[in-house]
Image 1 (cartoon, rainbow, N blue to C red):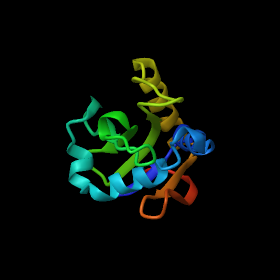
Image 2: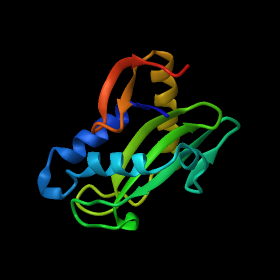
Image 3: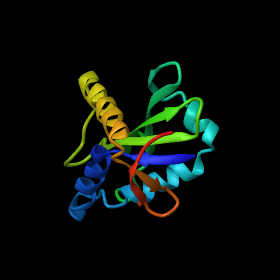
Image 4: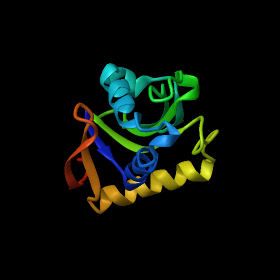
Length: 146
């Protein structure tokens, strides 16, 4: 699976990791662990879909927060776009369900904004190809989906 990230995703990760007192510093390792444990087919066909279109889905994945020892239901929410026909996944946003920076959910307009940002960044070749096996390291910037 080719994994990419948007500016919103990278900003949300940075925001969560910059203040260790909130207990979100495990977000990078928790995301990597969750994604690496999932077969590509499960990433595509999970029942945690928010929106489904002909050739892509937007998914909200529940991820435990090991930094606060919280279960999936109380941990992080990872929003991603995944192609149903190609091996492409784009990380759109991550947010915690509990704690100082918590959110219950995103509003519909926020999902649309994330999708618009992804489409714009893809068109402008501003996505970052991301290595989920190596702590979300950028493999390259100025990438786009083929």
